[in-house]
Length: 230
Ligand code: DC
Image (cartoon, rainbow, N blue to C red; front, side):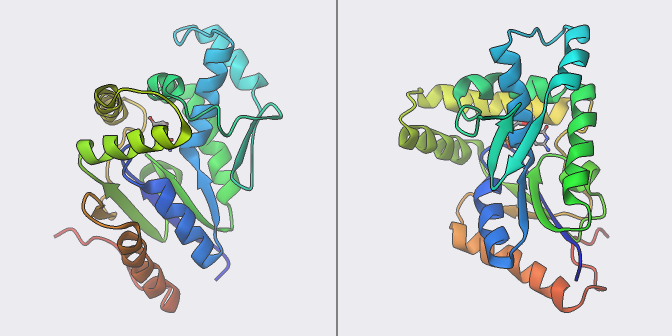
């Protein structure tokens, strides 16, 4: 098979990137973390003190900003910002940045180019609905807000970032709200996506579950693998 697209969507902290990386390794797929692309733009906003409502500056930014992804490292105008885009500060504005239509248009175009004719797994919010609506497999990962906040909190501790649990929890809830109520490509489950609640599953269990669908489709590319809506 020449090209194969796996779309993984879901809210912040549902386990998308952890799972997508493992699946990509297992099947030798390219992995694209589309959230990191929005994070790079958010980081640029912070660094350059750009006002989210400043339309003119946003247009200029879109023309001047260059995003590159290489081996899961993220480069913003040549600078490796892979670590700098995972801070509470970036978290606090990234939803608002990703709601800007002009930015979405530019990033979606790049994501489609990267994924064209490849074996690829992408994670994000709108992969199965907007970026690749014809993806071979669409997964929608969910988990309770408490569990997702727990995971984010642990991640911060591991990285030595100090943040109050309650604040992490509130941030997750706020991002859920902003991501799912925005006008442009809100976070919604595609009709044909397979929903998996990871709250009480191990990483291995989720990977095995998704692998079953991929293997099925690999064995028989013409069969439909996805949710059947009756
Ligand atoms: O997956 P993440 O937490 O790294 O994503 C960061 C933000 O980017 C998230 O709040 C929503 C936005 N996002 C998006 O709007 N569309 C995507 N395809 C990926 C992320």
